[in-house]
Image: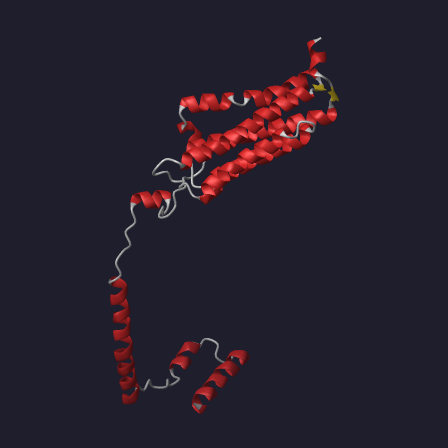
Length: 252
């Protein structure tokens, strides 16, 4: 080793002084003796023992991985999710295209009484309490109808909504809210807020809480509820900004 270090120092000294110009340095490096690679019998024995222990364990792991059976999932479950214990259908506004035409025509024509009241007040720039109360009564009847629809949906045999305390009890709540709204004859604003609460609560029941209706009906219910709610809000807004008049003045 001392000889090797000495030769390296001499090569470095010669390269600095320019002594070894024209003489290839790599030949000097080739003359440096390399340490032999000794492999003892003990090292060979140790490696053979380690490989004999590690390789079987790797083979066992590989066999276990190869013995795993693939999980088979039905195509319907992959597309629509695991439906075990879940009777709710998915919700999307695109499902409205699947709605029967009678349901669409009757459902959207039911928005006429909601929209006609604020439209009349906006055209005449006046707020009519009689017209607002007529809209309130119609909204209360719709809220009560939604509760009755839930009750009728739970009664038949084989219905996804069994006639238990949750389904039948929650189907009565909209009717009670409609009754409270009709009691607010002297204060249309409070009655309209109760009707809005009933519409929102019924929609929450039908979409999330209770097992339910077809997807097209949920989509239609969402649109109808939003339009009816905005019409009531528009009536309350006109009450605040327009002058109040009686319906008899409109006839004159």
